[in-house]
Length: 108
Image (cartoon, rainbow, N blue to C red; front, side):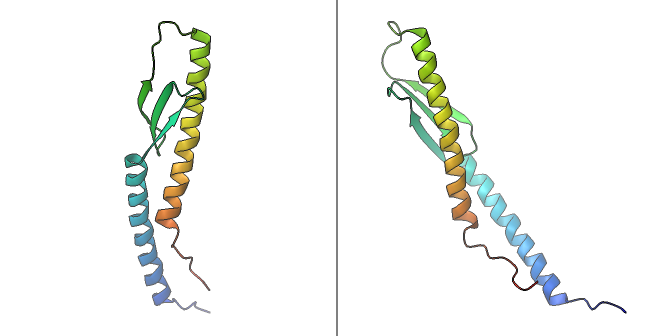
């Protein structure tokens, strides 16, 4: 027995695929363009990271001359870890914004 082809369903699936591709491109542009700024626990280091996870700037507030190297390294590790978490959070928020209204194919 031959199966019937539901051409309307196929057309809808193709349209939805194109829509998904458009949303994906929008999301990819947004994660590169959106940045988040985080600070070390002592506020002496600031890192700016994109939602894609790329560190685009590091700023040190205050002098380094009298700073203990081990303490500075701890603060740097902490702020880089926070930057990674902030990038993940920003990606999730952008994903929700871009794909949040996307509906599933019901009944198929």
